[in-house]
Image (tube, rainbow, N blue to C red; front, top):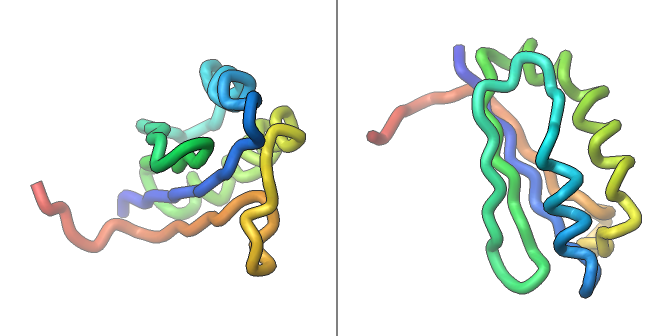
Length: 96
């Protein structure tokens, strides 16, 4: 069953382009689609589609490697989250 993950980031001022560039050539096995949205000044969310939860789990080392390439551009989100706020799960309803 199709799965999705979403990760929220807050980028340090002046580091937006480095953050964006780090995602231009991602290589995450199993990835169907990925989208980066800007949710406010210096705040972004990446939403990715996977064939299933297993494919998503198998790609985590590659996603962490990507994160490590730009970790220095991120601000702590606070509340004990660290520099990312990730969620994931299986698709339960296609709205349109």
